[in-house]
Structure formats: structure tokens, C-alpha cells
Length: 341
Image 1 (cartoon, one colour):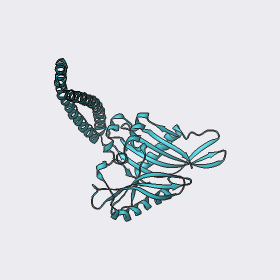
Image 2 (tube, helix red, strand yellow; image 1 turned 120 degrees about the horizontal axis):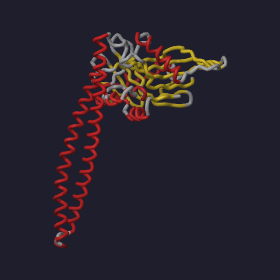
Image 3 (cartoon, one colour; image 1 turned 180 degrees about the horizontal axis):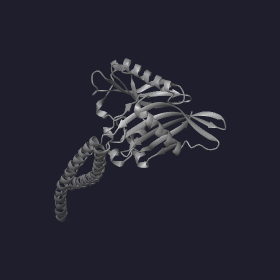
Image 4 (cartoon, one colour; image 1 turned 30 degrees about the horizontal axis):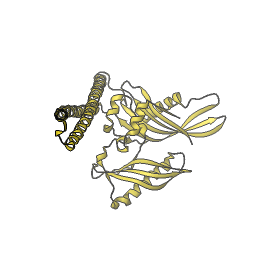
């Protein structure tokens, strides 16, 4: 079963490219060269081994092939990051699973599992600033998880894992954890840049409309005069004028569409900036008074294993959850998915 925060959020998340979902600009990723395939194979093997050790899919998986492989060109020299789309087989089906895997010296590999859930947000302004997202894998003994896992468990029990007289649920273990901490200042900066870009496009569209309208008036005047003069104008010339008029009308229509889109984007970013400024002011006020709530402005993406007991019969349930702790210290369920193992 699955619950999502809104249909708009779902559509937004599912339409985004994977590189955006993982919080990295598409231009930062470069296609891996044939010379890198030895390393790519090792990375893919690590990713699949991790999925099996953690039993992410409730069953063992086998690597069929690597459908796509990229490396992060902007990483520091000592840090290697790869983005893979792996074709894996499980039970009687296959699936494509995108993963991001990074390695730094003296540190274990880190792995991020791509899912559209991770791009759903708690508020509308955040949905515009997706490119600023940055997720990181957490060690399962990370301090934030003591609070976050308990909060997630309570939320899941209130939404879907509801005990009855015949069935109950016990959380066995946390399998995988990722975290993203909001940076409101960065979000405001991103919206300001989007607003500036939209204002530039609006001005360009307005200028283009005036230019094309002026040219259209000239063409229409020429056509009017030609028709009033009877057959003195060659039909080929008149046909050319008609084609120019059609092209100008289409150009004006396209510029008007760009004008409308830019106006809508400006209005949207203005509202978003206002909301984010209010959130930032609240955060600053808390910081100056009693201090920010611990772990506030934090998203967690967790994969948990539950034991379901129905009339003394035990089965396993896998729960994937995206939760958020807001500025007031309240944990919220943003998205979840459960499946029987």
C-alpha cells in the first residue's frame, strides 16, 4: 500500500530525471568511458551485494547487466562517485534500479537508492528548488536515527501498520537510511535566480512580440495594397507574403505563450520566496531564543523490516518511508510504501 502527499507532488517527482532526484545537476555527470568499465563492474557488484546483504527487495537479486553508467566529473580527485542504472533479476521478474555509489579514502562505500519518493516535499516552495537537494547515506547508528526511526515507526502505525485484535506489527530492524537537511538560505537563493531568469525571459518575449507585431502590420499592409491593385502583383509574391504572415502569427503566439509562462513562474517564485523568508525568520527567532529544535528541517528516507503476526502466523513486511521534521519539531509522514515479503 502507498500514501502520497499530493498528486501534484507525485507528477512532479516522477517527471524529474534521476540525476535531479539524487540532487546533482545532469551536466555534472559524464558517460563512463570503455576504459572505466572494470571499475564500473566492481561498483555494480558492490551495489548488488549491498541490496542482498540488506535484503532490500525481500529476496536475493542478480545483476543482469549495466544499462547505463556515469561518473561525477565535479567530485574532488580523492572522491569517486558513480551513477548506475542496473538491470537486476529477482524471483520471476526483472527491474531497473538506479543507484549512486561514492567512495572516499579510508571510508566505506556509500550508496543512495533512487526513488521518486525522495523528491516529494513538505511545502510547495521546496518543489521548485529540487536541484539544490543533496542526500547522504547514514550509518545505522547515526544519532538522528534514534529519534527519526521511532518517529517513523509511530507514523507508519498511524497510517498503515494498524494493529487489530487479529494482527500486530513488530519492527525487526532498520535496513537502510538516507538524510537530507534543508538549507533555507540556499533555497531562497535558488528561487531568486529562477525569478531573475524568468524576468529576463519575460522581457525577451515582450520585445519579440512588439517586433513581430510591427513586421506583421507591414506585411498585412502590403497584402491589402496588393489585393486592392487587382492582378498587378504576381501570385508567387503574394503567396510568399501569406507564408510570412503565417510565420509571424505563429511566432507571436509562441512568444505570448513564453510571456504567460514567465509571468506564472515569476508569481510562483515570489510566493515561494515569501514563504521561505517567513520560515527563515522563524528559524532565526528560535535560534536566538531557545535554539532550533534538534534535527529540525531534516528529511529521512528509511527502509524498515517489520514482522506481521496474524493469528500466530508470522510474515515479513517491508516499509519504505520518507519523513520530515519541521521547524516546530514535528515529524511528518511525506510518503510511504509497504509490501509483503
